[in-house]
Image (cartoon, rainbow over all chains, first blue to last red; front, side, top):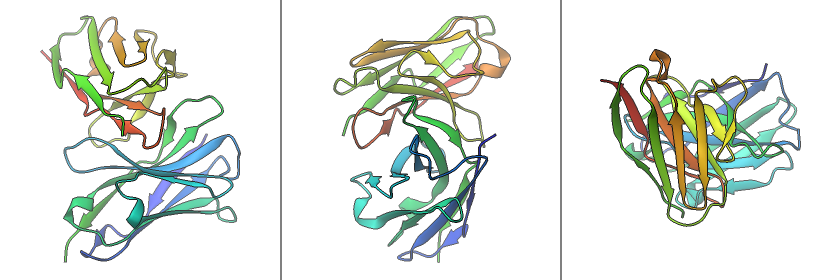
Length: 121
Length: 107
């Protein structure tokens, strides 16, 4: 059974860089069948797609965040990571990592449990 | 960006009711639409993909329909476990975007 687990600091200072890692078990980030993505949800609000990465390292970002986002892949650790620079209070949210099944054209079929990130000095 | 608009935002219904949620896209997305269920404090769960395909393990009382710009999620007979928030999401073109959500509440 595929599992995804987010990890990283729960508190980030304004203007600093948010860094999160998603560890994948029960499957491989090197598979050509899937994209690996990040989605966030501010408290009490809806979902926002941040970006995806493919096994080749090709990335796709939300234009609204593109200038501040980097998503990378570490196949040796079966992980992918998110970096969001110059954070403000508006970046406080639950951050989810997820798998997008492109072979079945499904959307995000597996999600991590989410990790809460607070932005505060 | 393609905007996704769900209606209603909140829906009050009783167990056994037939429930329909609508999702409209600001431009055609063909059938590249997914529906998710989210319960408080949990990650979303994929229920429907490609507008009308039922994800494995999802009860058959859930169904999706539509193409182009208008889509619906129908629950044929609402069960206690179905009270949750439902989101639509398109994956037609970057950026993927979600609807604002529809909360299904107990009447």
